[in-house]
Length: 351
Image 1 (spheres, rainbow, N blue to C red):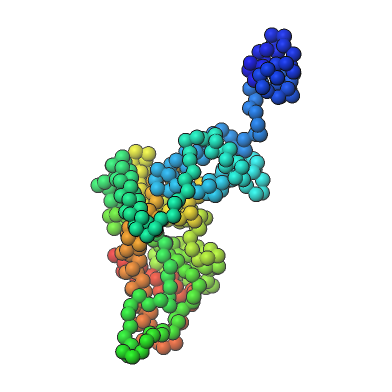
Image 2: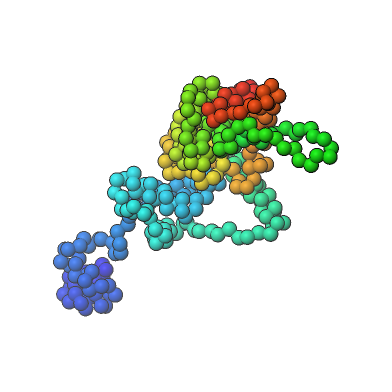
């Protein structure tokens, strides 16, 4: 384009300059007659500003380096969030398309898309072992870089688990010839989950109890664990909004307040997509919190809360229910009773 403009300035006709330089005649004419800025870029207007695209690119790389590689759908959602936050709403009601993603990837050649390969069982086992080695190597780098090796009070682990009132964590005694150990339901069957966070030094934050569909009636929170926070979702599980709420109202208020860029705190967490959002990543960076994902499909062996705290919590809840059944045959635990049932077992595992 610059050569074509120079040729026109030197007296060449617009059509000739366009043909010889391989640019559209109308495009060249618009620039010659000042209808379009000379340095205007060819093609459609970018939906996000250059700064916003660079911020998104940094997000993607930031998460990948912390074992949180993002999917294309997550990136599209993040781009939409950035667009709406800027007030431009250029993506409209349907959000960014895969056509936009292809353009974004072309503008950022330092990114690449990888598709996981199907593995047979033996290769899957070896892959998991290799993934764990890579994970702990990366974790060691982070601990060393930020001098966290000997600071257990600045290393945290959070996780979510289902509270099933009708599933006994204890074995029961039945006649030898009886095949099944049937047990009457004692409580609601809706999903209720609990989200906990502990530090490597042993401190325990108040839990976040999540109800399915809606909150129970009455003063359900009065007899629950001290400082507990309550949320609701359609499924009874954590979602992006609830996780951000927990992060802001519990985690940031209970973790060390003397955080800085050189002296952050580390949060080890499940890398599930329902926990990760652009506002969460931004908030964590602003608050000097390093988010670090556990290896997918290995939480049953490397998630401290799964292996230790939740197992003990569920055993104590089961004991309380069995004692209640023995004292009262018609025991029924309503939705509003759940916080009270959780309180004592939670205090026991927290002590």
